[in-house]
Amino acid sequence: LADDKLVLASLEQYILVNRTRLTRAISDSPAMMNLVNLYSLCRSLQNERYQISYSLEAERIIFHLLNEYEWDLGSFDIHLESLKWLFQQECISKSLTYQIQNISRNNFIGNEVHNVYGDGRQRSL
Image 1 (cartoon, rainbow, N blue to C red):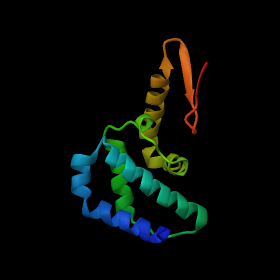
Image 2 (image 1 turned 45 degrees about the vertical axis):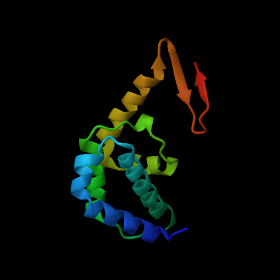
Image 3 (image 1 turned 135 degrees about the vertical axis):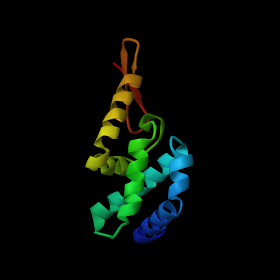
């Protein structure tokens, strides 16, 4: 597998080069969530293992996408470490709060509450 530093640097370069296209065409798409998932995973690895440099501008673009455009966290698969890292970022807390509310509303079906576990199991209460 590629070195974490190289993956993050390549991903940041992609974000910076395509910033205009990202803000116009990619919002509310699986491609956006894949980008956010991968970026967040790379950054979470940075926190766990060692400090690596990262682009503040690329991070700002990712946060802008999450704060300004419609997206649905509940409809995408996201790595647990990516999710943890996202929830540690204060500047997107309003957007994540909105996502939690949507997931909660969508999981309340009729008079039953459905819990979905990380391994895909589901249980009705």
